[in-house]
Length: 335
Image 1 (cartoon, rainbow, N blue to C red):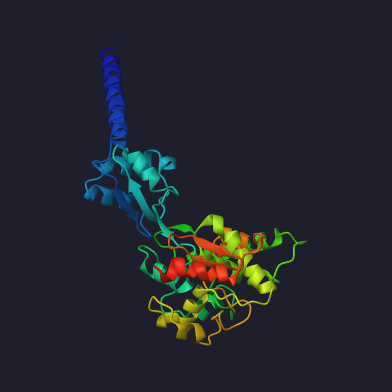
Image 2: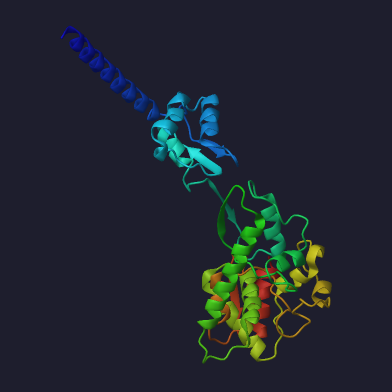
């Protein structure tokens, strides 16, 4: 009997110790990580669970790496499969929460904004400067980029939708370009198909709508003016008048543009000088947003044929050349 009591006592002690040990182990798993501010952590390619746990411990973020190594033996189903990428660890997270985060899709992303009215050259410069982006297209020509996008032989200007794109470390600039291009194609198709097909327009197809939208985008950033600008352009084309829009002259000048347009520039015969050519320029001159695309296929009715910048981001619209010249003197020459 005495031996039996001793065995029972030993079993009870063992069970108590085991339970206490288990509870202590569990407490180590949910101990808050040792950071006082949000901390960026990257799971490198090929890193396993044990390697990441030891690395976090070496940085002082995890206090008890043994507890997480033991987890792989006692409860392997609870061990997250870690994913490559950058993650933001937050103060107050437990060790288990931190490691679960490293196995989630909640990677850190970065914004990349392409403003409406930018050129493709400006977009490429922004991509080249973007941090954490893989610069796959550096050294590629515009033609090579378009070929990689399945648009071999096409001019790139206008074919990329201006917006804010988010990416994570490891994404390539080509992926951003592909996403932007596909969005522009989809939105252009939607706007063109959604136009009033009974209404006559001076443009005949999607590409001409894209060109027209780029002129509208470069002429005004005021949302209330886009359809009015489109109306002026449409009426001038219908009457056989040249568009005479300065942004096309500037685009045709390329790197020679130094901030001012001279009379000689207006007389320079380039494919983009709408003071010298009839109709639209051969390609878009910038990346238009959706509102400019919609304005291109829905110009405002009216009888204005001219406009001049007032210096505050808006324009004065005129019906006659005489009225327009007076507005030029008021807003441009006197200023």
